[in-house]
Length: 75
Length: 525
Image 1 (cartoon, rainbow over the protein chains, first blue to last red):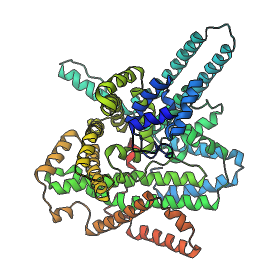
Image 2 (image 1 turned 135 degrees about the horizontal axis):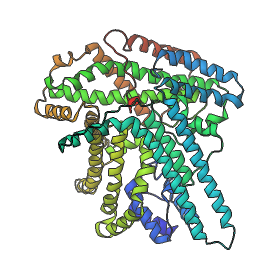
Image 3 (image 1 turned 120 degrees about the horizontal axis):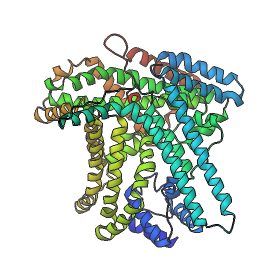
Image 4 (image 1 turned 90 degrees about the vertical axis):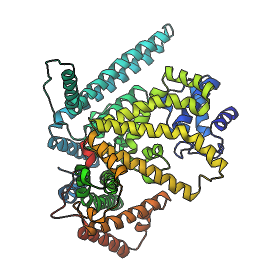
């Protein structure tokens, strides 16, 4: 989780990732940041994020992104 | 049915359907909704045959995909099999079914919507190369709402393929989802998970839903009668006779057209969402105060939302996150950094999105230019963003400051007005002429504005309604729910406000000679 927060802060530093739960709906992360984020997550956690998983429900908070990573790692 | 705005629909058909809906048993209510959808298709240019073939295609293809998946799961339980090979074989089969289904549905869309455009252009090309052959011009009458319907149908089959939803066994549920009667003409482009369950479940119509639904419908009707039909003569004159008009008048024509389009489309959506609410169905919203956006990119996340998310989910991300582009993003990020690296690959996907968005709106060069314009505006905005941040930091400008935010919205609106001018222009030649007109003879002539088919009385009403809509939007933007506040008032106060509102529409709405009720604009797309 810490590593994920580090990645997120590297891409968009002006957000409190412990608290914000509308990263997509609140437009904190735009589609370009998502492209970078996906690529960083895939590198760091050795997972492949299918495009169908790129939905606000999976990316609206650091917690949710982390759950997605865990789910993909299990698969 | 000419339009959802017609008195027959709003005051006779809809109450009648609602009444019958309430009288039949809950378990059978879906039948009425389905029958209604089919009747509307029957009335609309022989679309029923197309509708049935298309529903059957997505229904059976989805089930077929499910069967392949089930078979794969069963085979994988056997430990002695080559799992990789089984998965690969199953994926190939699924892909084939998906491709065939998409092609069939796209073939309908192309045949109905684009055949004329392609024939004209191919014939022009043949002429250019002195080939003595011309294809026969075939213009088929497109079933109403085919562009909206096709995207919903495709989303269903793609979601099943991706495992996002399970293929629905009940044919009725799929048919209902694709033919819910208020959505036929102009969408919104719904996903199966949005409405299918509620459509099938049935519910008794309660007072709250009936009141809120009709309130919403009334607001849509208000937009149409106060603004759309009133502005129509002026907009038509400006776009048809721009060559004799001043630059300011042409510019105002583009502004009024944008406002008219917004009121027309969002007004229809009010009627669709309101109708859904009467039956207890939550139809997704298509607008979220778009003119409060900071830039063109945000505007398109607030205007025609269901189209934007469709393109994002089924074109933008699949293209930009495809293996070759993902690889490219990775390499480019190392060279160009976290902003410009993904911007290059994102732009490739964005170009595909805006090309298709333009084409979706219609077969014509103005629509393709409309797409290109937005592509350039959005990519340009993203390209300049780091520079703007840098300048603001240097000059100590707070980007959250209200003045800065207003200026941002004004700039965004100017781009949107021009985009909609491209959209509405009768031809590319006209667009060039109008653009030249704005920049070369930008003078104000008050008398000219009164000779465009509307008078000073119209301008005053438009202005007052504009202020009213602006205040309502501002309140919504601030999360203040006016309708809830209204619902909490005393009964006599509520009814008084309602009667005043109806009276305003009756007295100040655009009726009678000089006003031609305009058919919903988006129903043509």
